[in-house]
Length: 64
Image (cartoon, rainbow, N blue to C red; front, side, top):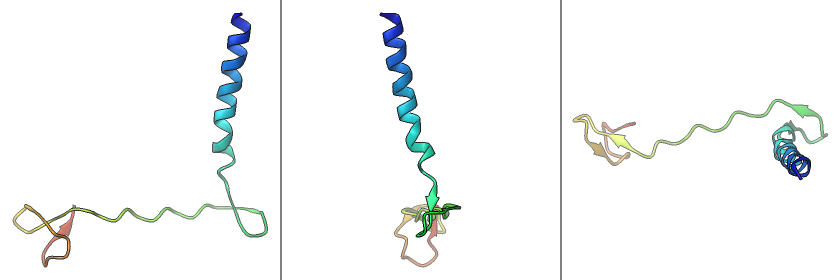
């Protein structure tokens, strides 16, 4: 019984590791290339000069 459980857990761990290997980037011809960098995260909060949170479109507000 232990061997059966151990085998099932081993297969499960191997199956879960496979997608990370297949995450390589390919070009239109199918050749492996370096994956492009992810786009920077846009700041959703800004602070005004006095240190309080402000709308990001206001003058003097800087992203946090």
